[in-house]
Image (cartoon, rainbow, N blue to C red):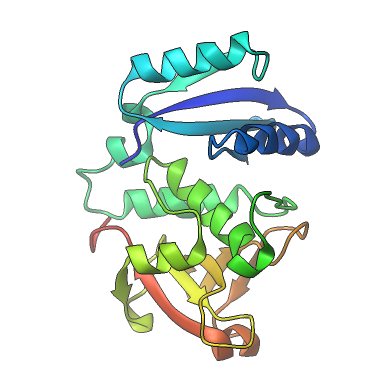
Length: 217
């Protein structure tokens, strides 16, 4: 479960959110951006065990001129906290809905090369963190952290992994949406899209799937 998070920015232009994210990322703050329901792009970072620690860090960054106004997101505000007692798939549907909110956005990250699966894993990490679930940032680490799930047993919100570099190593990841579909960031700068596991290319380089939720989620 994710702790307290700092939210900053409210940009009409995606590029402004990307620049702020990269600036924070350069400070080792593990930032990510997303499109808010109102259409503005916002940035979040941090995983603080207490509100006080998050407040102190945000205040330091504001005094240093790195950020301006900020909002502290408490763990209880995340879907993982609000729906953790539900056994009807609500949290899984929230993960899919969050992923769908990224469709059409040209996703870009900094800090690691495309070969590590960073763009696609950054999307998966962001979708999970926006719902209060901590997920590693690299696709291989995500693959190693989850529990194996058979292809026939996939459920919405699980992650599906692929070897797209011509070998057997995990290099790409998508968020399963149901009925054979998944949402992913194809490569740097290209719009996030929905694809199918039945597609010949993805079927051929499919490595496996991982789940991070209970059976009913």
